[in-house]
Length: 189
Image (cartoon, rainbow, N blue to C red):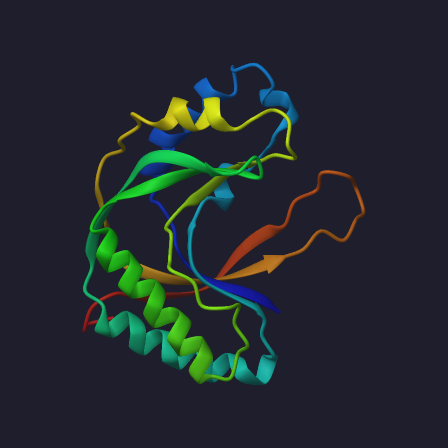
């Protein structure tokens, strides 16, 4: 099954971001972008790709240990940017160092289970809002997010999420995400 470790924004934070996104959707060319659904918003910590069923118990245990070793921390949705004209994203504010640490630990846990990970790169926290294909340029949308500053919340859990790929063949259909595990952060988790 296709899995990733993630931090999910709470409903109040998603509400704030949804207001900013609604404004972005009024910009010229917004209809040409593939906007992500609010219920799929997340900060990916480690993309695990296809995980064999027999690896899942060990992975779950290792992620539980990661969660117990990581104290809850403050985070906020903040600003935004784009990866070329491929993806528009919202950024993170608050204790971004703690988010990076959690991502590194989740990545290491997966590697210790023998899961083949992508080439190790510096973690860049982002929450994908829309995908493009070269037109329109995403620069104006990123500029529209530049001043966005959401209310801080406390990250209290690490989630394991299953990505269910589209099977219908309908153009534009997107993956559906399903939380298959939640682990509270901190020693009591």
